[in-house]
Length: 272
Image (cartoon, rainbow, N blue to C red; front, side, top):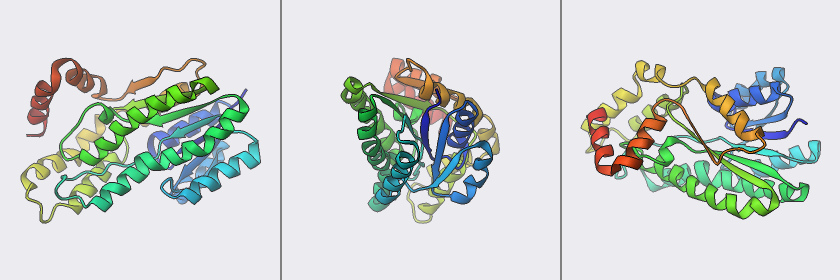
């Protein structure tokens, strides 16, 4: 039987490709994102676009209410919306850091709170959270982004234990480097905090790498990740974590088994 699925962050990249693949598999898919104009063509794939900003509670309530009214249930929530705030801890205003948490953690937490009562009432469901290899490792100038992903990892593990008695499964996806707009977003945030920074030398090196077209081309195609999302959302017995994408396994392996000292030496060689 097809599942009723809400995918957030579905206007581009992994979220968009996952929504299309899930719909082609016979599932009823609602695709949520802030940029409604970027989702207009998704209806051609049988997908229902929903304009929503996960950091706005009313948008989340409206989206979930719409699905319940139309379908009577919601089987899978794929929390994919998020962005990367990059810059130095000293330079980034705390209001910007708080917004990073609003989108990457608290927004998805609110959306999850909204769907859980319906999943409990219907006897089961699944929450799929898009973390990152950045939830297990760290990179220069990504303190706030990595903080949200590290938090999401622990939050999801606790949620998995809490909801297990209600047949609600919680799955984490940990992508590596993906061919998406992420590099442009990272570069844009670095430039935003660049002008008066005391860290310009390091920022210049990092920005050059983030904006290098060759670096983007080395990322994994978002369609490859889409297949991982489908398995995470529909497998009878999903894994707790799925790791996929360029550099994810090697970097996570180095930090876990060789320790922070060796891992940091790798970062220094990579970023100068």
